[in-house]
Amino acid sequence: MYKRALKGIACWHNVTPEVFKEEILPLHQPAILKGLVNDWPAVKQAKQSVEGLYQYFSDLYIGGDIQFARIPPEEKGRFFYNKEMTDFNFKREVGPLDTFFRDVLANSKDNKADTLALQSAPVADYFPEFEKNNPFQFFDKSVPPRIWIGNDAVVSAHYDDSENIACVVSGQRTFTLFPPEQIENLYVGPMDFTPAGAQLSLVDFNEPDFEKYPKFHQALDNALVAELEPGDAIYIPILWWHHVRAKGGVNVLVNYWEGGSINGKTKPVPADTILMAMLSIRDLPLVQKNTWKALFDYFIFSDQHEKYEHIPKEIRGILEPLDEQTKKGVKKWLIGQLK
Image (cartoon, rainbow, N blue to C red):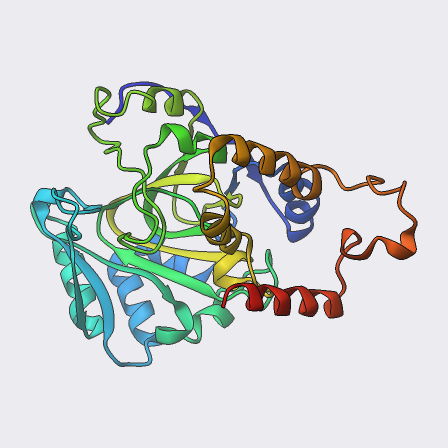
């Protein structure tokens, strides 16, 4: 592990939905929500014993096989690529929950055993009563929870295009976070060939190779770290990079993504625009790209307030906030352009 102290993340206590929406969200900064889900029955079971937690989820389980990942011990729990980056360093398996849980319990006591992980599974697929028994009121009620279960594991630094609140049910989690602009210093991998859908930093945080990745020093200068216990949660703003280390044996985390490509209510999402720009702008000469950048800064990224006051309101057209009819017209035009 890198041998340096990192800055801590702001820690909030006794957070209510109102405090979260009115005081924390507007800051657009990561926040530890201390003890946010201490009252969840699942957390209470986890604090008593891992066997009680196992029984709790077994009672909620509706049956059917689950899909999980298995990483061999030489990979030290890190979900990643193989050495040649031609494939991944884990295998997908399918089996009953009981067998998976028993293996997780057994492997959690042996640091030379396989790492097992049920990752980002919709809670409703396996434990439909969980959401009713463990309520969450900090995002829109239509945002479904996802669950992560396994023994000690590492998820490399990545970003989500959604707002994220992750709640620790069992075990401990260390989150190392970087602001979006640190993408330049994180040496991210391919966009369309990834272990779990999101681009990853190729830096091994446990043994960083600073000769190969020298700018990672700068990323660490801007890193924030959070240590979470059962009952704690963390708010991760959209596009913040986060590296996650699960430890403590049997680990369970439940998270909620709001907006973006996962739970967004409108399409297209901003991430789709990157692909459109790859088709139309990325391969232009640099001088042309800089020209387009000026237009994007003006029409898209800068403050729109009172920008178009010099144009009579009745002829501003799409420069005004788009209504549903106008959005349909723009989408229809774009579909035609993509043919």
